[in-house]
Amino acid sequence: MALPLSSSSIIISSKKLSFNVSISQKPTQKHLFLSAQFAFRLNEARSQVTARPAVRACNSTTSTYAKDLACEHDSPPNLYMSTFGDGTKKLKSLIAMILIFIQISAPVPLSGWDFWYVSPAKAVLYSPDTKVPRTGELALRKAIPANINMKSIQTSLEDISYLLRIPQRKPYGTMEGNVKKALKIAKDEKDSILASLPADLKERGSTLYASLIDGKGGLQALLQCIKDQDPDRVSVGLASSLDTIAELELLQAPGLSFLLPQQYLKYPRLTGRGTVEFTIEKVDGSTFSPEAGGEPKKNAKIQVVIDGFSAPLTAGNFAKLVVDGAYNGAKLSFTDQAVLTDNGLDKNGGYSVPLEIMPSGQFEPLYRTTLSVQDGELPVLPLSVYGAVAMVHSEVSEDFSAPYQFFFYLYDKRNAGLGGLSFDEGQFSVFGYTTAGREILSQIKSGDIIQSAELVEGQDRLILPNEN
Image 1 (cartoon, helix red, strand yellow):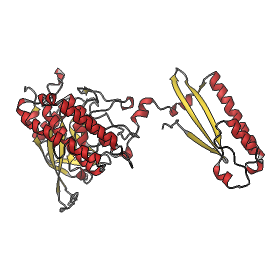
Image 2 (cartoon, rainbow, N blue to C red):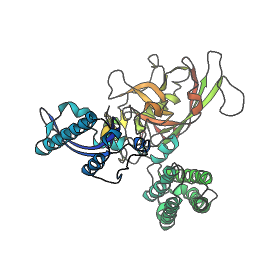
Image 3 (cartoon, rainbow, N blue to C red):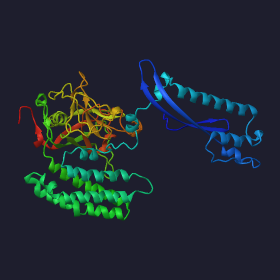
Image 4 (spheres, rainbow, N blue to C red):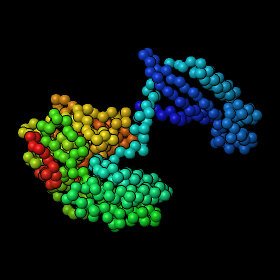
């Protein structure tokens, strides 16, 4: 467990001793040398001063230890502490000065203190400000390989969603600036945006573009909501604008933006997005509770969007299994962190595809390797989202995914790191997210079954081996 060293406080007797420690680590073969600088400041305990009206108040603004000590000695000692306590304080000051002298003259090897050290990468990664997508919709939107101008518009608007989280007074001026920036890019780069659309989709794209600028849920309407300083309307307007952007970006990205390695062309692959609809059935006589209204039912539907842009092999293998009916009748098991299918050992088909993870900021996936989250590597499709869908590791090698078994991840920030990241982040091939029926996941019990799984969208993007 890493202890924060930016500020620490120790209460001694009636005094509060506060100190700051700055430590830099330079590993050697035998010792860890820490260069530490201690700055001490002694402040009077206000509660005890106010309890004795006869005591003359000391100057609380004095910054040096000498003045504080002189101020204290001007007052009768029996009003503050015993002679023994005063001597103890002087002894502690003497020890502190000795430590300072030793640290200045030569660093002290503190090989047992290395557990205090927090690397800069971890400090940034575990910050609550880490901008990792928290919903499947946001993660999928960020994963679309679209026109660079559209991505700039999207980034400006995504920042508003983080600004809306600020409690109390919200920075509406900054939000307004972000929308105006997005509007300027959209208008100035109109020709570039529309030119990146395939010929057969230009009409649809032009309609979406006009809606983005002046539509009911467009940027002009969002700008007015921000000027009215209505956070609820801003949130709704922002979601509408981002949905339009995602739809337009999908038209701009009809296929993969990179070439797959030659040795992986033997696997099925998905060259875009697909949608799978699961029907889950209770087998113990219980029912699923609807989210709002309606009657409890024995069956419930879950919809998952699978992403071939970031995980073409994993999504392709999964889509083929769905089309082949491999998951119909599959048994489910429930744990605190996931809903898993059975291992499928009695099933035929399925490829043990290599572990496939696309790092954020890269244009193609990495294969057979995990990400080092401690070093700041984050995936385009993060696991740290409730309802994330990923393949289990192969029983033979963790460099490969299982040919059949997958799981729904039940992310819980209470079991995550300080930055809200799962401790398994960057270790599994995530290939999609639950976009409808998320409330059903927590109601699944071990023994429930997948009654049916159907690829309702994206079959035209599924390429099977030996096909061009």
